[in-house]
Amino acid sequence: MSDQIYEDTSPGRDYYIQEDKHELYKELQESEESPFTESELNEIFVFAVAYGSRKAGRTPIDGAGRALFNRPAHNDQTLWFIRSVAVAEERTTDVLIDGEKVKEIAEEYANGGITELHNKVFGPGDPLIELSDDVIELAQEHNPE
Image (cartoon, rainbow, N blue to C red; front, side, top):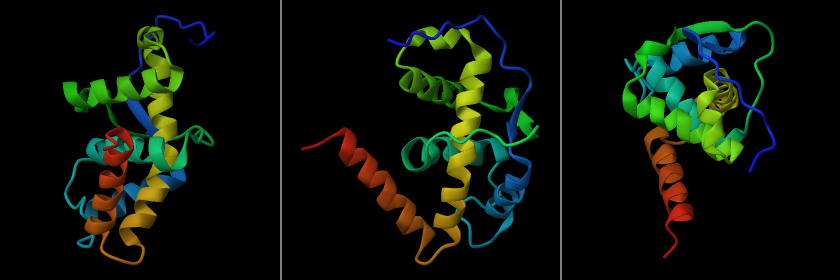
């Protein structure tokens, strides 16, 4: 259990990213070579959170940040995913009352994850195969035979 004291806070309206990483999101969204072509920015963000939680760790946003999308853009599934990541990080469900902390954890994982994700997509090899291999590896870690 965490010794952290959580406050009943609202996550605010917007999710933020580091200013200099906005182009990474846009390239993933707009490039024909990207498996995320025409995806919504909040969908790429959630994938970056997941990727960051496994590959990069939390990386605080340097500076004021830039709003990427409004919180209502998330559906129930993505909201629960983000909450689950926060619970796993803090090792307590108490964090769920602290909307600001939950959002901060997601933003920091996405901040680290977006660089790794971008490098994977635009690096050598086939991005779909590379990402699929990562998903298979993760599934095997959680479901050993």
